[in-house]
Length: 421
Image (cartoon, rainbow, N blue to C red; front, side, top):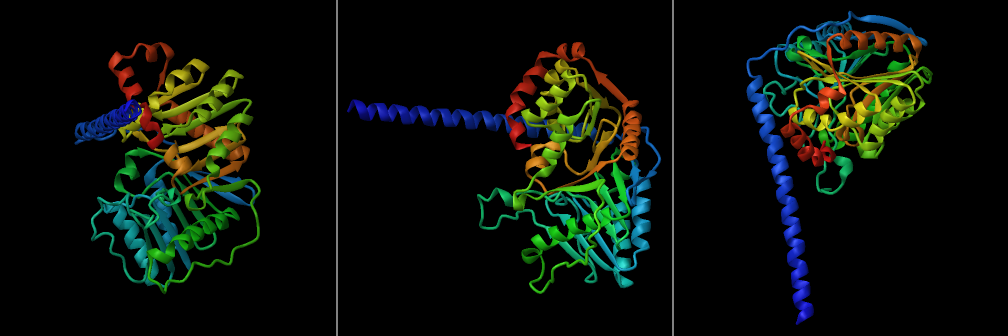
């Protein structure tokens, strides 16, 4: 009888602990949702202020060129010009495609290209565009459109490889021009957000085409009509040794972007300058930045003062004490959302892409980053960083330690949500 009572007591204790943990998690999740709703209400009617940008600059990299963009209107004008000048094929992929005036401009340009005989392939993420009108998402039959599904696992409920979102932003026109970076498609991004994108020419464009085709072929069978054929490319064998396109492919359990960052940071001897929209790294990533700063490297982290996701801001702040104590400079971009995902190391290595430094991007989503080892391009991205830094408030250790007690409590309470973001 005593043994049964002991087992019963043990079961009751285990059940109580589980309930307690679920309750705490529920409160954390509820707090996060509540904060997001309140923040969304406060933002209604408010428009970002002007922010400094740098005009598009083109530099030679190997056998091609790279043009940098820091203002959406400049980028969209060149993207639309490329679409309108297409002769044979357009490959277009985006995470968010708003049904506003800017989104309509892109839709009309792509449809017009298809009508004149250009082969047009489009991919967009279903979940990211839930709030977009269904009418906007009706495309002419002349366009081949893949809507990456909201739920892609099917009956494989526990297959984590099938839960990643398509967070990539790619445009390739014919064989000669490619675009990649952080910009989604929408009117707000055109003038109100600070982001970074690049245009490529030369052999690197073929790697961008391969990236698009691989995603299309991996997902076409259950997403399109049964008769849809794979996207086959007659790809060139020429390699651009200064540029690589790193791709996270959760379906294949391949996540090289995190390793790319860590290798560059660990090799740094002069400077590491990071710009990140959402900074929620794992501890190994934080330790790499701290180690670099402690060995005398100039480590700077540029993030939004207030991003469009308030919960991400609060979770990100939980890392500031460690970073500041190690000598990392934390710069907060004010008056507008900085959405760029870029980095430079030692004036030689740099990256521009779609991956944030968080679990969803580095270990969950389909992402793509350009990695370049080129002093000219790295120098240009350093100049962009300095322009952004001129619009920042630098966080000091004294200011950070003096923050209110309720802020410290909220940061600590939300800390377990890091693994979900």
